[in-house]
Length: 121
Image 1 (cartoon, one colour):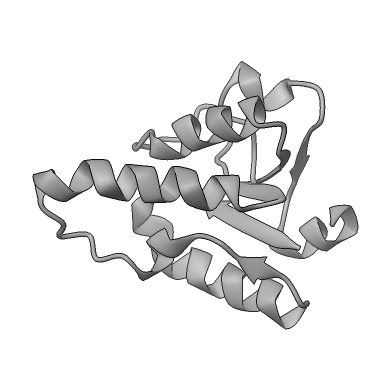
Image 2 (cartoon, rainbow, N blue to C red):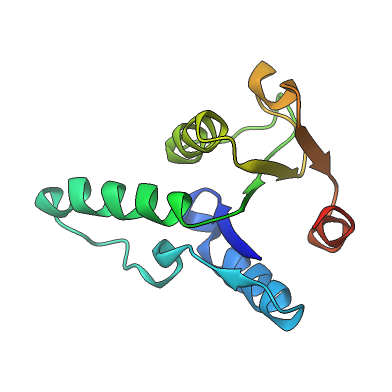
């Protein structure tokens, strides 16, 4: 199954671990941002965002690293990716808590660990 991993950019090391775990279970990861360097120029922002949308288009399932409501968190790209994937009728699985009312939309699953994801794949 083709999977896109969405998370805050500073969680890239954790997402690389998740990608390895999922690959071990015969899944393909479409998230090229896992290979990205944080020090991209402003001119590269648009092409990086478009690349992420293309990677979401190529997935069957998006797995989002979420945080419990009320936790201190920053960054918003993953929320845009979530909405884009929802609009594209992708399967959505959140790992962690729920951050917004949109995480309670029909068909969105929330689990507590990456290991629990395998039950829904």
